[in-house]
Amino acid sequence: MKKVFRTIAFSLTVATFLSSCALTMPVAATSNPVGSKVGTAKATGFLQFLFFGQDASIQSAARNGGITKISTVDVKSTSILGIVVTYETIVTGE
Image 1 (tube, rainbow, N blue to C red):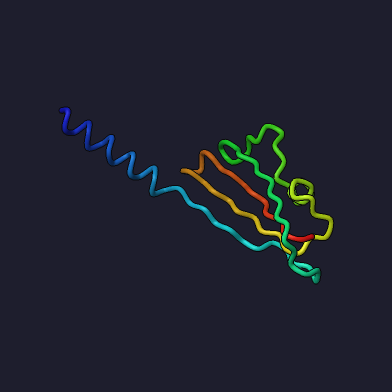
Image 2 (cartoon, one colour):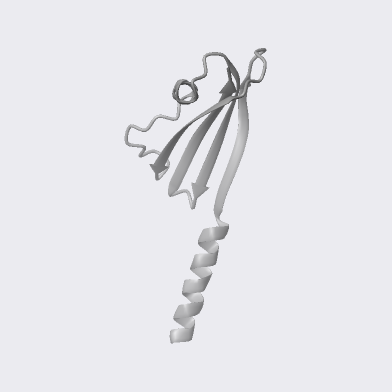
């Protein structure tokens, strides 16, 4: 019985690590030259809709990086079993 329990526990652990996914996608680009500053804003939610007032907007990311002229905007989303979801906005510019 112990061996069966260990096998199931190991299988669930491996499945948890293999079922997470991260994807980075470009959202926007402007004609401004690519700058040296990078700003990020992150929001982590549960069940894909409970974010509790977190802000991952482009405006927050630009403010966090001290950027006034935005060059590119990327969004990175990470999901673990669809239960814990993280969205990160990455802004570059001057």
